[in-house]
Length: 244
Ligand code: GLN
Image 1 (cartoon, rainbow, N blue to C red):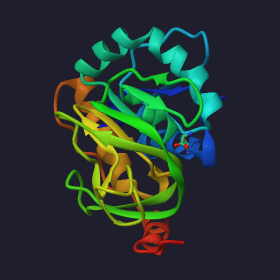
Image 2: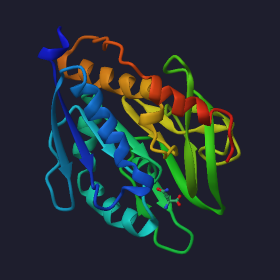
Image 3: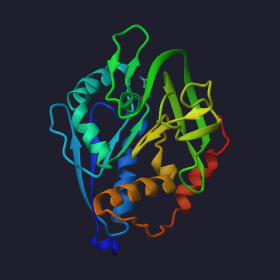
């Protein structure tokens, strides 16, 4: 299908609450990379109290424990529907605090456990140390395989069952600073600790998510045309292997 005849629906979960370190840059990247190709984008924000619409791709950013608690309650009300969306192939990307809520729970230091929505078979417990710094990691999902970003979290995330790591850390801490894993994925649900924001510096992964979302919508694989990613890849390459 010609790109100018394609359409995609993208939803941003709770942008007023979870948007740490400019995570909105991920949404801007997804929308722009469609618009630059002439693909029509239906975009919506989902804020507290809003009904969750049936979209092709959902994004949720990171945030502090307090904001996470409000979002956790909102998401939990829609747990079953979110599972239906996942099982129909919708694409989800969660960053840090949003990623943590895609698991079974997030246990902060000295506060009540936050229920996650179990889109991923994972759980998070607050660690004693805050991991802050750049991360370089290698994924098997896209070529080039390198992903870069910035982490700032005390949560330690552990993966179970069929939920696999998004990548293996070569610089930085990733999920828990112990097992060298970074992020997670199951079906078309993806989570990562990489702020930065993540997708502008990893355009190959942005296109990977868009192709998955278009495949879910049209029922066939769609290979997106190449864009000039010189600037994006210069920013990406500056970070590769750098801890700070
Ligand atoms: N509050 C969570 C933690 O510290 C998530 C932080 C974030 O989203 N950067 O682990």
